[in-house]
Picture 1 (cartoon, rainbow over the protein chains, first blue to last red):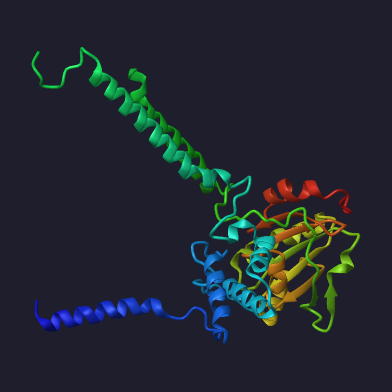
Picture 2 (cartoon, chains in turn yellow, brown):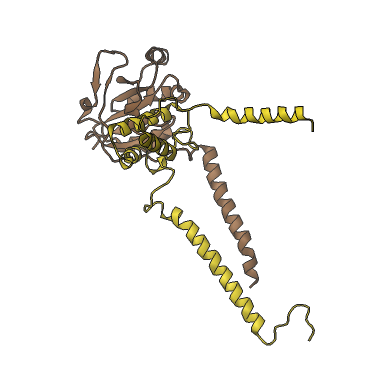
Amino acid sequence: MSTGLLQRLTLACALLVSVGCFAIDTEAAFTDTNQQARYEHLTQELRCLVCQNQSVADSNAPLAGDLRRIVREMIEHGDTDQAIRHFMTDRYGDFVLYDPPLTARTYLLWAAPILLVLMTVGVAVRNIVRRSRMALSPDFREPGSRS
Amino acid sequence: MKWRYSIPALLFLGLGGIFYFTLTKIGRGTLDVREIPSPLIGKAAPHFALPSLLEPSDLIDSNVWRGQSYLLNVWGSWCEGCKEEHSTLIALARVAGVPLIGMAWKDDHASARAMLTELGNPYSVVVADDAGRVAIDFGVYGAPETFLISADGIILAKHVGVMSDTVWRSTFAPKITNGASR
């Protein structure tokens, strides 16, 4: 490969990556870094309700912009993260949180991975026990062994 | 123990069945996977005071409907679904027996007024929520959305998307009793 082509390919790749770098959130950053960190964390963990596979931080839907402004105002007003999450779930339900709380409606969601692991372990243990029993029984012959 | 070999096949058929029924429901429009259940149903409707769209000097306070149930329709002239449901709203406003309040959501006032002039005005009052803040209090995420609020200020029903006769008859009409619900 010639260096010219390689350079051009590298440039093309760099340009492709830069497409993703448009700022969605155009508001000025907080002067307090701690508040800025809370703001970024909260908007990342809230789901945009219009384009449901994006967070409020990543979405350029007008509603996401409004919700970002509310998060910003509430942080400036001195509200806690918990209060901000409450504000959102009071209006939009648990759906607005990417990390749904453990409730009567979500326990199956949370328990499913544990249940699946337990089931897999159960089946595996049973199979191993059965095979070792077969290997110990007097009339068991190794495949290919001669009697 | 031969039957055990059919377990994967049965699981596959079961899963296929679930997919089949769910996808046909989505196809028929009876199931909307994007619809988010509102936590506000059964709770007090948020209070608001917003300027009237048609009489901008009038501030309309939601307390004026205390003791009377009403419908709230969140719309915008930028919203295609709102134009689609407009004729249904005009028909419903006549038969509903309760006032239909419009809320122009983040809309340009001139084009909102133009839409009402062109397609007709089904609303007894239209308020303008320019900042979209009241809409957020109502948990609105996509216009059109329609709410039924009881005489004591409780949200009884909500529909996200185009209002239709089917939705009206199944979700709203049963909750309205002789015009002065509950």
